[in-house]
Structure formats: structure tokens, C-alpha cells
Length: 496
Image (cartoon, helix red, strand yellow):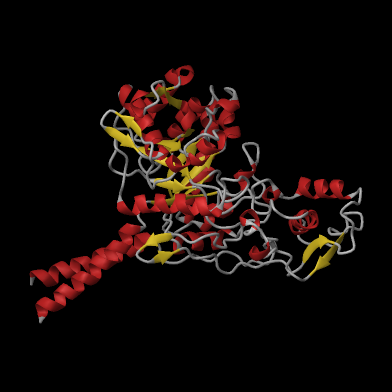
């Protein structure tokens, strides 16, 4: 009887351990470029309830960092590119930054900061060498500041780079090497990271390969195989992620740093703003990525999977759209933490929406029923609205791209009205062309084509009605300690 009881307890513990391992290493980017951001305490709960135990931040926002305190979520905190110049010019400036944004949050708030990301894709060709002379000195100064603060072993430095810092002249990964114009600089950085135990962080975006080249084989962007694999010697590459990642591995190996740790800092698929940025493709890509993580699949050159940070958590309606309208729609969740599409997280766990979100009143600003679409003031009114609000969903191939003229204007008017917090008079700026309604004007999917079936007329978050932060609860570290204690009890039982 005792034997069967012990076996039962062992089964319970193995199930518990399996659940712990399924979410291990699941990271996500938390961007905050939003007109109506979710309160940080709600976001931290959203992270924890969906198994994200690692988060990457693009800047050291005090409210965000405080909310992450004692949450059990590991943090990579970023330094924006516009701060590289002052940090590169002064060790003292780096020491002050570390003290204010790393040391204080670790000691006072219990934030589990593991990495400092110095810059964000600073060597992009589009930046035209703007950060070429400041990134490496800033990296050195931040590392020196961490050592002085006694955090040199606990917090590691890294630089998130874009895949355009390396290339292959042979068209296959084994031809990989760093760009000739920055080869020397990359060698200095890679050696410095290696000497100080820091990883190299790489951002890989299969979607952008498809966006940039209309002839790019679409099945090569996903993880379900392709009829035209890339053959590199004895290796057959069936997806662009593995081919891209291994090109970097080859570049490191050729230069004597084949064992340098690599983190995938950003990878994902947008859901709007382009014909290929849609919910169907985003779900297909991200589910394939999560399946790889849960199954522990690496790449042909590195079978052990790296830490991966999904991009991103929620949509950001004020993010720059210079690369494309899709930039505001990378979130797995909508801006308010609502679920866009379901994902299987393993162990029959699916995505959970944000809880406790408070909204503005249920009313919308739309084009008046008696307004004429031929009114000469209509084009300027729409342009005015979209100059101050996010209208990227109205573009060709986007979720609201199939609306008629009147619905198009209503969408623009409403986005302005919501962005302005439904302020009195904000729906009256459009030359008597608009009215307020309490009936949701979002079009039904039955009356629209595929491109507009997910069109949503938003109501914004009421950012002034949320309560102050409460501790998110028991951390994963505490759970692991509890599990270890139970495991010791089991060993004792089986032995005796």
C-alpha cells in the first residue's frame, strides 16, 4: 500500500514539474508606446497568468519596474538609443543611470533584473551610422557601473542587434559573417560580451522578409515546412528563422566566438496594417514558435534552444509607423489586454485576457446619418482625425480596409474621439459631419469580406479610474522553493 501511495505522490510531482518546465524560458516584450496604456499592475498579472516569466523593456519606466517588484518575472531593461551619447561620454553618467534604474529597483523593490540592453538595433543601416561611435563606449561604461554597484555577476550587459549586422555572400548560413563596414566594431563588442559573461541579443523578423520581398516564399516564413528548403551541405533549412539564426552562429564561429550565448530578443508577427499582417498568419507563426519552445527545439547549428522574447505583448497605438503601419499591431493582445486569437501554451493552457480593465463610457463618435459623403469638408476632417489618432487599420489590406466611405469616416472620427478621452466637444470638430451614438458601430463579419471581419471600433481605457498597484502575488521563485521542499519529502518517503 505504501508503495502505491509513493507512486501516486511521484506522479503528482512529475505533473507539477512538467507544468513548471512548460513555461520556463517564455519571454515577451512589453512596449509602452500607447496613448492609453494598461496599468502596470494589470500587465504584470497578465504576464503571470499566461506563463511569461521573462520580460524585455525598452526603457526603465519607474511605474513598470515597481509593478514588476517581487513578481517572479525576470527583467531585461533597455537603454534607448538617444541615451547612448551621454552614457558613452561619461562613466559617471552611466553610474547614475545604473543607480537610478537598476540598483534602486533591485534593492528597494525586489525587481529581478537580469540584463541591461544597451541601445536597440543601433547599427541599422537606416540610422546611417548615427550610433556607430557611441554604442560600444556606452556598453563599456554601463558594465563598469554595474561592477562598481556590486552587480557585475547578477546583471549582464547585452546589445540587441538587427539581423542586418551579418550577411552571407553564398546565400546559405555557412557563408555568414558580419558586415564588412562594422566587422571590427562587432568583434570588439562580441569579445567584450564574451569577457564579461554577456549574451548577444538578436532580433529576427520573418514577417519583414515577406514584407520587403513580394517574391519571398511565404511557407518559408513559418514553421510547418516548405517545398523549397535551403540546402547548406548536409543541412536542409525549412524556415527562415533557423537559417537566419544559424547565419549568426556561423559568423560568430568564423571569428572565434562560437560558444557566445545568443538571446532572441524580438520575434513575432503583426495582426494589422498590411495584407500579410493578419490574425490568421500571426496565430500560425506564434503557435509554431511556442510549439518549438515547449518541445525544446533549437536549430541545426545549436540544438539547445535559446531564450526567446516574443514581440510583443500588447498593441502600441503611438509607436512610429516609419517602417510600416503594421508597427502598431505586433501584440498578442489588443491594447487593452483582450485576446486577439487563441494560442496553446501547453498542458491544455490557453491565453487569458487582462482582468480589471476599466473603460470610458460606451459611446462612439460616428459620421452623422444625414451627412453627405460628397461634403467638401469630409477629406480634411478625416485627415485631421487621423493626424492625432491611430488610423492604421484603415489601410489597404488591413482589418478595416474594406469599409465604405461613411464607415471609414466614422472609424477616423471615433479614434480621435476616444484618443481625446471622449472630451466634450471632441466629436464636434468635424464641420457638423459627426454625432455621438451609444450603438456599437463595429461592422459585423457577415456583411464584410475577410479583410474587414476583424474591424473594431474601440472604446479606450479610462486611465484615470484604475486603482494603485497591488503586489501580484506569489513569485515563481517561491513556487520553485515550495516544489523543492516537497521533492525532498518524497525522496525521504521513498528511501524509508
